[in-house]
Length: 352
View (tube, rainbow, N blue to C red):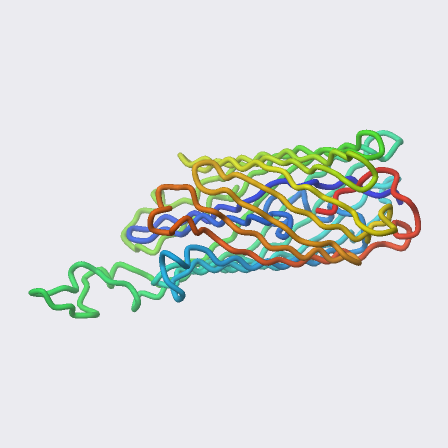
């Protein structure tokens, strides 16, 4: 089985958009997008060289603005692996499981999502250096809010606060649940022995589920819009040990659009640099349009990738945030297959 082309640093950001009369969820940003591959595009499922991949990431955002209890906190955990190999020559089918939970604000607005995904990887040609991947994803999402922690204008009577007297309570529900369907496609290609690229598109919320905390809203007013994504990433091998890994990502949903671009510098150190488990150090710099400058850094060792990320806020909120954005810590493990471990790679599979 040849080493498989995967992703140099693609994608980012899953938007968790929520319509309701008086509350709106945050847009979730993962600066270390490589630590949460299944939230980016279902076609990322199984897109690595090895037996299985396990990833986890934690993000803490806007603590300087909201305070500790109301900070935006996000955790993502995923597991994916090939399940049927050599369907046709090197083609394979992969499956994955993604768990995601986000909590934000004084009202503990939370989003808990579990997704299952499948992806078929079709090798094109006979050299094993071109792969077309199609992925599908489906799952369940529950959004919840603690109304007892919210303040309403009509609870202030004659200058005094009277909790629980708001007329809004009768119109609000504490939770909403929905099923989600996502799809994506990627094309990957190796160029020579040191470089490769990937380009992909995706569509999320294809079933446009209906959700709202406001019981009065008509169903037509609260459908979750389809979120479209596009991604481009590459590995550019400067020599056997040093590579550049640029990437760009764009997404749009309803009237909102977002663009992220940047580069990771990856340096293999020590011996065994031609093996999948080669030790490496990396650092990256990224820009989220009209929002933040982001930096990442970490180490790869024995199949593990451990990293940290930080956002320097540049948006209109920078006065309140004192330019502080979000902090992340992540860990990922890829178990190499015996064949991949024993031989020198034919081309530089991404460590994504």
